[in-house]
Image (cartoon, rainbow, N blue to C red; front, side):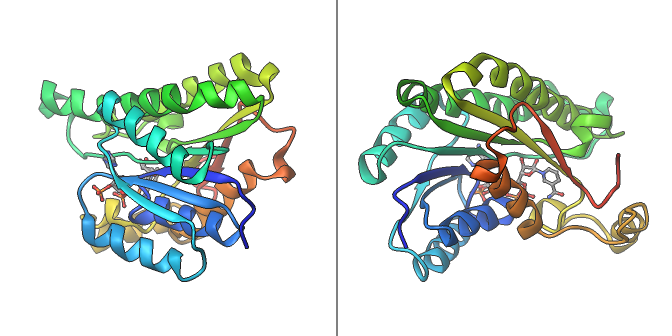
Length: 246
Ligand code: NDP
């Protein structure tokens, strides 16, 4: 099934991005996903999606680089048509005291998690504005809502994504473009691979639903926000966190 719509997902090689790419492919979307360096995961996800759809392409693009992003978006649109849904998902995290966060680490966090959002949205939005349609979903985090100790840089970047979502939604709403945000709680991906068992148990215990979430559960929320079922929803932050924060 090809619904002729095109969804671009950053960080689609693994984790939440890969689950999101698969979810949209199942609904008939043409998929382009960007990743940075993990060719093996990108190939695995590409092959998995190609089993259910003829329209999936993976592009190795560093979202911190505006020129590369712009060029890749252009190429993606040439292949699969204009982008209808943009999912700004790619991100990095780092656990460290603020006083032990170097200027380079701080800048890397912001240029990936926020700079990437700027580069992608600047590259995709003009065509959406021209067509008077489109949906943008940004992936923040519950730590962007409440803040997390030892994750000041990460929380800063994720809080900025919430501000970006709310402001852009107001600006482009009159052009029939919706902008929303998903703020996941603790999700079982490689981003959390370095957590030890005790920390994982504590995080589960602190979650009212008594477990950590799956990438597919986040993907379902992203898909909902892009779908017609969310046609009157814009500028919102949807928590997918098992009730960890309310
Ligand atoms: P993963 O670490 O599993 O995957 C991250 C993805 O982002 C990979 O595809 C990676 O590509 C890509 N990426 C990272 N930096 C760049 C870059 N500079 N250019 C292009 N692609 C890049 O992360 P998750 O799936 O766990 O997280 C996805 C999003 O969800 C992130 O924004 C994260 O902050 C957010 N989130 C995650 C939570 C969790 O508990 N897992 C909780 C709350 C929010 P490559 O593999 O090639 O490096």
